[in-house]
Image 1 (cartoon, helix red, strand yellow):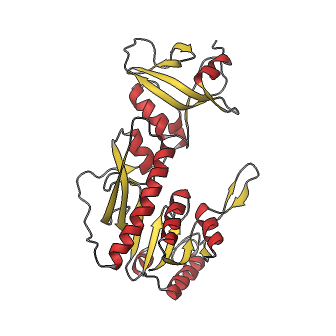
Image 2 (cartoon, helix red, strand yellow):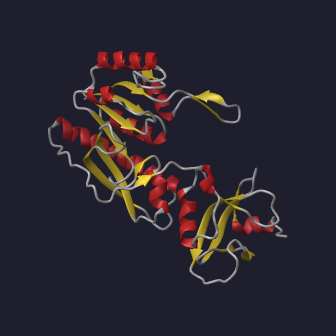
Image 3 (cartoon, one colour):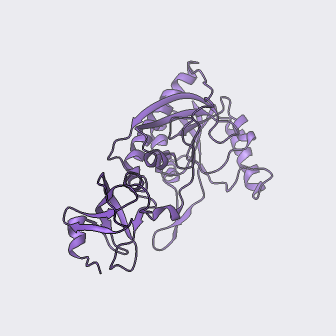
Length: 313
């Protein structure tokens, strides 16, 4: 099929590679403008743009697709380009721009989105992290026929991915990216053969995955240890959970922790024990055992190494 692919981060790059491997004709890639990155803040192409350039596929990077928005000339140029291509389908994966109605209507078979949850649970910006934070036992990928709403379109195909008690956001991202690539290839094959049946999302079970906020990184020890442990996994690698420990001027990152169902009357945030097996912190319910940490400006360290260089006041 003749495709336009719209995506930006690594999650989308995996799907792009899967579509190319399946033999689809990707006539154009749309991705976010280059962003400053690294210590030198050098303008850096997105993973999808780099993959497209390596494959010799044309790239468009409009700052907006709204014809009545802040960049109407760029939107008009994008419209003319898409009309000249006349794609069968636009595949969208973590693109980062809202698609106005004219975009949704332009491809012959519409726009298909690869969404990293089992809709209607976790519509919105951060479905991977919110699923872990909430303690969900599973999540997945939904291939959705896009409409003008926020992840409200009809469901076409789903792939389930389990979440274990050890799964962090980086691991779940990679598993969902692979599932998304497989699912979109399967969906396009079925769509071409007329074998996809759109299913409306149920009204029951709708939840929204709010965008991650850096302020959430600081662990509130008044909350239960089980929630804090899930948050550590959900925020690994971004934005990274953090905690303040006595004797250190800055908060430290917590990359791995364990919830211990031990009752304590100590003040939440108190250090109960610190040795090579872990740093035990009192919480609102239970104990949070810190297992891998990182001082400001330092490297990640297992707790046995960390405690050797830490002298609490």
